[in-house]
Amino acid sequence: MASRSRLLLFDTGIIIQAFRLGIWDALVSHYHIITSEIVVEEAKFFIDDSGVRHIIELLPYVVSKAIQVEDVSLSELKTFKNTHDPVYFERLDLGELSLLCLLFKKGYEEALISSGDGIVYRILGKRRCSERGISLEELAAKIGVNKKFPDQFRKKFREDYASRGFDDSFF
Image (tube, rainbow, N blue to C red; front, side, top):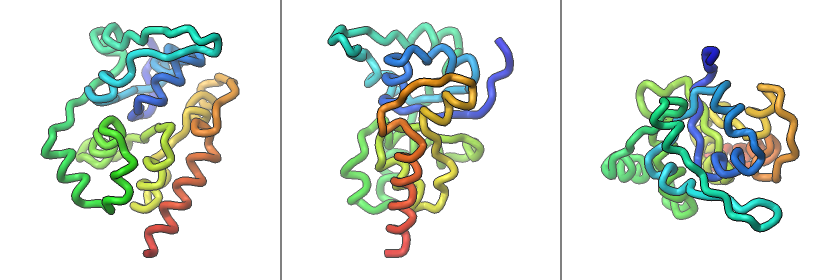
């Protein structure tokens, strides 16, 4: 396998959508993907357009070190959560919270986060670091994968929510 570029933090929605679109293996081969144990527990299956349920098996990717899984302690989650506006965190699930903890942890300064949830990008905007977010659409385009993405996985969605967060930073 060629050297993988960019350190990326993927949430549950991104993993599920990548499997759904059949682009997971392409992403894994091009990017250094990190997720949390919480996300691995959440990303168990997806349902295709025909209504068929498909199991997501991340363990082989973890065992082969194709993706990296990090643990985030309860105390790290609480500390991170307590440093932000509680209104934001009411909308975050544990998987997203764990990845945001990793994103701002020492050693992850170059990492980007990808999510299908606007609140993640809004938090980045509020912290004035919206450039640390990237949509699934943008990731796919960078490796030559052209697919139609639902709105929450598009660049415009990411930019809109980051802009809202930036606007919130003035209040």
